[in-house]
Image (cartoon, rainbow, N blue to C red; front, side, top):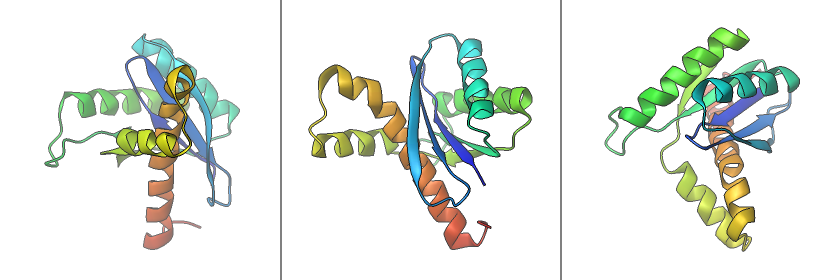
Length: 142
């Protein structure tokens, strides 16, 4: 199944995708958009372009497992995206993915403007890799 992941942000939204084999999550792009509705529309257009069959939206729960303001905004984003695409949406716990993305970029010595441009796409890859691992281990993957 082609699965697209979204790391939604107020200014930048990272997008990653995996092919039908569900083996490799690859970064697609970062959407630089501050307008909530326009970001949803651009994400929906990418989902169509990528032929996504499912979309995983990062769900940034608090470290203690509670749902905060940011997670609620991501939930609303996911609901509106599902209405626009008709594609099933899965909210996926993304605690620490941005920190992990920064750590991965430290390893590759990616700095400055280039880092800012890719960190959200790397976070989307990490979200998707986590979800794909769950699908393989739970038997959900086909």
